[in-house]
Image (cartoon, rainbow, N blue to C red; front, side):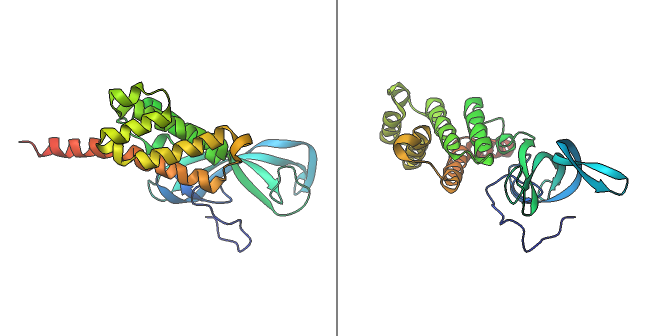
Length: 240
């Protein structure tokens, strides 16, 4: 079991877990959780560097695979990690830490059920992967795409016929219903998505901003897809 160290990097509850920060959303169940390191194995080594070991010169690992167990679903996830020295890949001095670069199951896939539109789920999952890779501009652009798919899937015919997302959202608010109440959130995501797609005009989006946009999109998915499906299921169960 991994023990805490006062010099550990600060934990980020919005980033995917790795052995340096064993907390965050579980790629399998989608819940915020803490993780325990169960096993690991080196997979890639420095091409020339060797160190003296008990059995002679040993290769220096620079990438490894770890298995972490989620404390919520009690299932394992696999993380491919790279070594960083002083927080830099290939750095020459400082503390050695390991940081995730690939996760299995696919991040984002565990948060959404079959009731969610495939297009919405895939756009949201891609945004989540971009966020986990510290690519906030790409993340918000994909979250904006998820909103477009939501309007096209759940919006009225009038909203779907509008020429762009801004006009679709305006029509959605006019139409009323569940989509209307989410209009301000949808427009907020739209604006950040525009900024992510055009950082030359609007400036870069920060990781914290992208994480907040992702949370909004996740809540909208919950309200438009997951909650109605849950209510329908409960109602069906109560029928004689």
